[in-house]
Length: 266
Image (cartoon, rainbow, N blue to C red):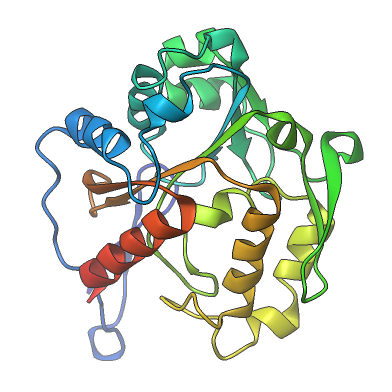
């Protein structure tokens, strides 16, 4: 049996024994007809909060969290829609934070490929560095004892926006949503605790489970500690095309996105 694995930029085809391999694939979902229109519509009619245009009408410093290059997020399309719906915000007041978690920083060439040349040139783009104490601020502890250190630029912003994509995650339940705060913008110490053996080994730390999952419970608690003003998530098909858009209050829109992603996976 010949199987194509999602490996690197181009994939990797491998030969596997027919009698010992079962391939499980998600349902095939059609892409939205017009991804930009779908994004703008979600920003104008969000779940559980006011439209983005209203929330940002007074301007101020805006921090936007995006996935790093290891993730398939359609960053450029999502950012273009955000900027269109924030006419009261100056480009110079926006910081795009690459939520690397504990990964390496993305190179200038990678950032340009991720965001597009125009966005990379016009806006301040900063790689989160979980190992740089001067880039982090201690914000307290969760009730389960996680010491929380988060990106200073994120905390200094007047408006905080997360962007991501939602798919089942093998121990955190689902990606996207509050994970774009922690571990995305968290210090190394915080992430090592979130990913320690007792949490990852918990029976509820598995695919598709968020409530009662000790990792996702702590991730939500950390996002609540600092506040997220607006969140945008998308679901994608195998071709990495947008199949649905969810926007609004962080936890409400993420629940809706997770439900859609679960349907896609069944």
